[in-house]
Image (cartoon, rainbow, N blue to C red; front, side, top):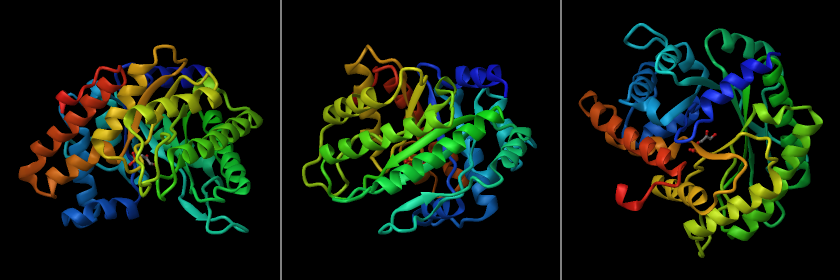
Length: 337
Ligand code: 13P
């Protein structure tokens, strides 16, 4: 393993005023995103869509890394370069989602575990040859009165840590993504309690596996009310609770924390990130974004699969990228919408 290589990748991604675009939707997920705008989920449409995202004007001013799905990394753009290369030429680091999705976790009531460790080192070596320099693995945790169980937390935390160790041994920076899901009617206090246990055990397992914290990226969910909770917490509560729980659980050695958006509206995700940065000037890590839906939803809406809408769709991605980039500096305001 070359620690210089990992450090160089971190330095290129963890830049104040920039974040990550998550464009790594699996076949099933991208089909779900295309369905409401009546776009067929063909290989060609996926290529056209991702090329549209990656050729957005000034993208590299706001986005330092893009997470890709395996298919996208090697897909040819209309310029003849692969889509990975299209990013690289702009100084944006290409990354790759490497987990193989969720399966049922035995001896639990419908809790999930993420699979994909078998053969991972070999897959990483070939993704690296194709230009990928960082990777992503997502684990999910459902909240109920009794979930997540210790069994689900420990199993997923162990797998996240094994994945991260394997990535680092291959010279690939791991994004460690523990997502506490927003689904349900739980309060923000319950989310805080669950997230504290999850993040704590994730770092315990990262330690057990010898993962170098300086050479990883944490991609957590925010501390937020359940989607069906009647009492929705404000942005200021989300910002304060999230930073409080991260301070309790995430070592200062971690260089950057890039949140997922998890189903929040585009505006709420930007406002929450902005307030975290605006209300705190003593944080040991960068707080930035690695949004999927909160960056892409307005763009998909504007596109509708039509060539004549490409400029308008790119304008939407440009706008959300720019506003979230401002939020990483605490410089966003509602007026900029
Ligand atoms: P969302 O921002 O849509 O949650 O997606 C981020 C992601 O990469 C989920 O794995």
